[in-house]
Length: 92
Image (cartoon, rainbow, N blue to C red; front, side, top):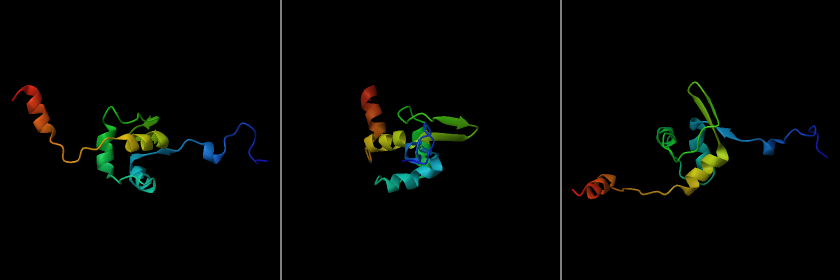
């Protein structure tokens, strides 16, 4: 029997919120490639990155499961020359 009052979620049921400075260590702990906070900020500015669930001033918090899913599903193209793709599209 639980000591928690009925209707109050247990600790493991609470949503896990993370800020950008926490993400590199959490990524590494999850077995994913550790990125710098600067790179995560850069990715957070894209449309593909999950939206923050809380924003106040400069503080933004994300749900960790959504962020982890984003990094697990993200397609990497190391060394891809996007400048050449643009020229090919332009016909130049």
